[in-house]
Length: 600
Ligand code: ACO
Ligand code: LMR
Image 1 (cartoon, rainbow, N blue to C red):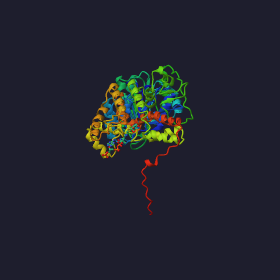
Image 2 (spheres, rainbow, N blue to C red; image 1 turned 180 degrees about the vertical axis):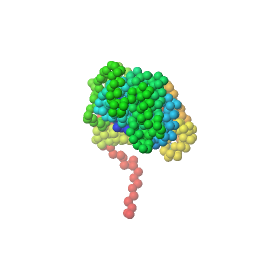
Image 3 (cartoon, rainbow, N blue to C red; image 1 turned 180 degrees about the horizontal axis):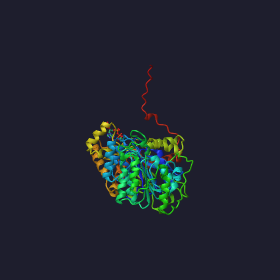
Image 4 (cartoon, rainbow, N blue to C red; image 1 turned 45 degrees about the horizontal axis):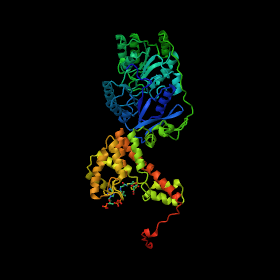
């Protein structure tokens, strides 16, 4: 891999570090990336499904996942893991990501991972061919393409340091702070950087100087390289060997900081865990001298580094970089209160999940209510057999006469002089686990039983222990002798048009057992709808998790609510048309059993 990141690179960000992520997205917006550089966030303790971030003045939603495996499965294109776990967790997160696979690079920010674990982790990554940036780092950047988290600081700083577009320098430092400082120096004295990595300050870091410089040697965008090392360790000698052997041909400018260490009597431990010399050849002085001897451009002091950069850069006669147009992140932004992902009324014509209403409304479009439901409820274009099933369900449950609980209530309310909407709502509020609202429950319990391989007897026992009647079983008036023809119609449709009906097949074996006990314990209309919806979604390719979510959120009862609304309105209009007076229930139809209240 010659280039660390491209404009299409996307990352999974482990930990919902909103400030760092917002910085990445502000950078993306500034450089006019098409897609956000963060595809998903792993937030193990969050119950939320997404986090809102600004994209310029607008907002976007980045999905949250419970763990890396889930995130990677949902975002397989994201091949960078930004591991912002604490030093206690960072090792496990990295090792798990290596096992999951599909990551080209992993950046680890935590400082202080135990050295034994850091070595094991770095070796595992190396064996897997995964580039590790860090631990103990701010990360890296390919200007104009992808920036890790806080590298470069604020957007103003980034633009001042010309980190918004590619220059020609390949920069490798240990320190993150000095990375930013050097980016600025390079912007002033040359044309900015093409790729930069702060490899991290711990004693054992994943990718070392030589790994990064060898990659930059292969990267045609990089014309020369700058290495900023520090006292401690011997990694710079590998670079020297590569220069001597001709493996690296591009010019390198280098400096090891920490030359002051020689003025102290004993060994000095600088800020980084790795910044301490254990032997003469690990001192900054020795390394600077050895690098200079090998033909690397080493300034006399750190203060002379800018001039050295200017000198080498100018000697290379690199053509000037065209300055790209940038987006400007607005200074004042307001977070939006509401989110809508189903319809949009901002254009000339409102859309349902991207489809203008006129493309669905009239008969010539060939679209029906089933299509509208699939777009507005599920944000998907269902195939004909599925939209026709939805329509069949809606038509099937539209009404079942005036005697059923909900219609009765709607009628009574209308007769009390209430409006259509008030009477309708009364009817709707009657829908519940016994009447019309057993669809979700039926889907839930039958699916659970089938998923767990329970035979009908085991299922009945299970429900007995749960202490609830089996949702979707039983009817007041329908029975084996008086079959519910609505159920027959739905089953017939499914047999003819569904690719398969495994849950229905299972439910019918349960029905055999329940009706053998009592003949009205049939699979009722609610049960049939719930079970067939599961079969439909499975055939449409929904995951079990998605189906469970539909069940939990009450999606299936919604089909009854939608369909029966037609009937309730019909009954209410009927009452109004007939100008029926207020209803009073006949007293002889009530068993009065009222005792005089006991005095206490
Ligand atoms: N699972 C197990 N046993 C049941 C079930 C059931 N779903 N339904 C009734 N029974 C049993 C009862 O335990 C009772 O047993 P018992 O005689 O040994 O005491 C017997 O059948 C009669 O019970 P009732 O509640 O009086 O049954 P009824 O026929 O009056 O009630 C009802 C019908 C309310 C639909 C009931 O069967 C039920 O609660 N079913 C589950 C909920 C459901 O699916 N509702 C949707 C119906 S369809 C619709 O509304 C569009
Ligand atoms: C209905 O569709 O309303 C019913 O199946 C309930 C009933 O009592 O008929």
